[in-house]
Picture 1: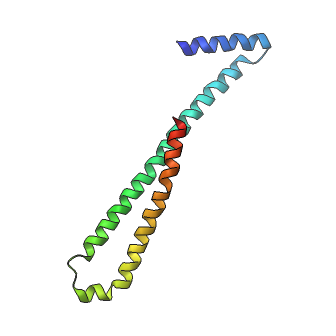
Picture 2: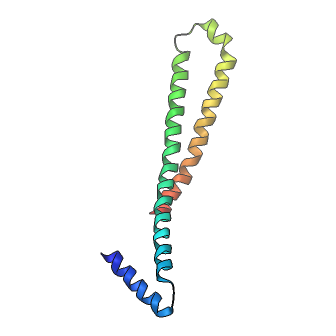
Length: 111
């Protein structure tokens, strides 16, 4: 109800200054929808790195588990490839961790 009262007052003021009431109301509604959409997008951006980090941590766990129980000969032969996989996982983890301060800043600023 307060929204309609506020819009009614805005319409009265707009009429006094000769502005297009329908256009003003449309602009206000569009701005409100854009703000809601931006909030949703910010929340989505925050969720993606968390999901990506979770997936990467699962990959890291699988990599560690795959190394367990292997013979010394197998580990020696596969050492180069295993080291490369660990570097890839570490790089992914680092890239997600860099995003968290940015996401935190966005969250604090929005509040």
